Image (cartoon, rainbow, N blue to C red):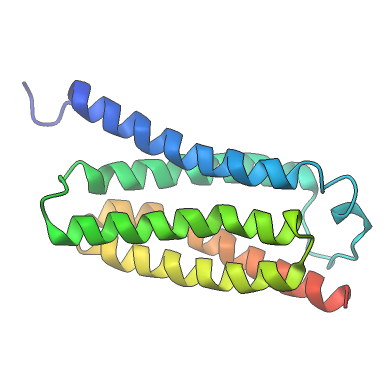
Length: 164
């Protein structure tokens, strides 16, 4: 078999990686969807707040890129300590990703959301650093995610300030 081909095991790892990341989005959306037309709609938002319809496509795309990134690391095998550390750090940031939706939308708490999103940002940055040592491509695939979470952090902080 050609080394560059995905193969069945590779396909399963790729699919599992993408599905895992998309499921994190599903978990977050459970807490988000009901709050958008009610609580979130009543908040004062900064002028740069995007329309609500933007968030879904952006997150779906980011979760896809995250899944591919995870796959590129996981396909190296978990025997290497660097790979295990990278996957563990990735798991932490993925959990924090879902926890942010619970904190911000579920608890309806911009301050809790801001606390979680700062931890999330740090975890993403650490994941990028750990992935860089294993796969530059995997690391680069997470940069749009870090940029979006940077924007989301500013948005979250602005909502906190505008809604004391």
